[in-house]
Image (cartoon, rainbow, N blue to C red; front, side, top):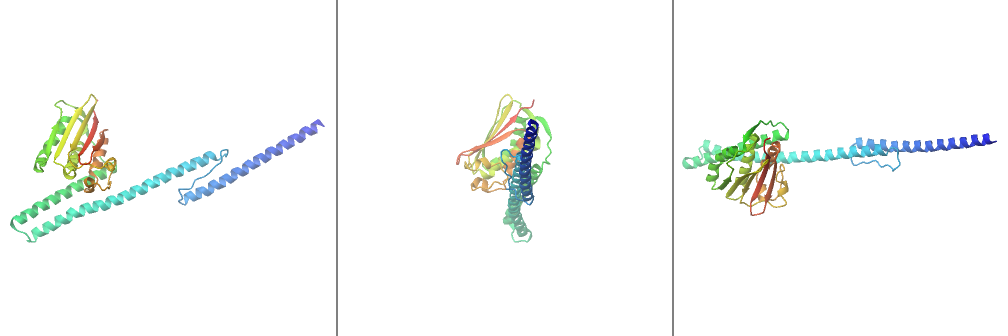
Length: 307
């Protein structure tokens, strides 16, 4: 009798276990069906699809992983769309920036070669055409510089150089331009040597772009460059006394093709400061900008000393 009861209890327990596993199997099957449906929807391009799972669902981890993969793909897709839109704006802006000086250049040269102007007027036309040609040349150089940086194809040749002496050399080439533009300048560079790993072309480009930005966009008449040194850091401050930049625009001025209503940033292709930031980063340095509207702007570059 006891044996029969034991067997009956064992049979009941087995049936309960079988029923339990059958329910779990059915639940798992249902979950897999939902996952399959979601994967097909995601495969069709719906990156907003998510797979829901209960707390005790055996497929919970799988659902979580699918959701994370979908979220990452969605983020990358959004970034790709933003990048494509940015490049379209870039191409539109660059086309305009190239066409304007080119059309003027062609117009002035046609007037000269066609005999429409003579004497002093002809000389003035040739001078203007030369200015337009140099403007176009600078634009193309900036464009190629950015393309190489953006594609990661820029090559650097770092060597240990005296930051102070190199800066003085670069400034010497700018003094005639500042004086011809009636720009006052104040230069403070320590007489001591400060050795660091520098790519001459890149560092020259950094200062040139900052000087060009101030000369062209600041609407001021004074430029200041100051180098201060600590034991392991050097700071280069380049500032002007111009119109400055609005606080809402300041955090974005190093972004490629940033568009805003700020008159200081409205004119130009938006590549100069973006190139500066990339080249400063290549030297493992940092750059920031501080400005008060109608009180100018200060660019501060921080470099580490060579070990």
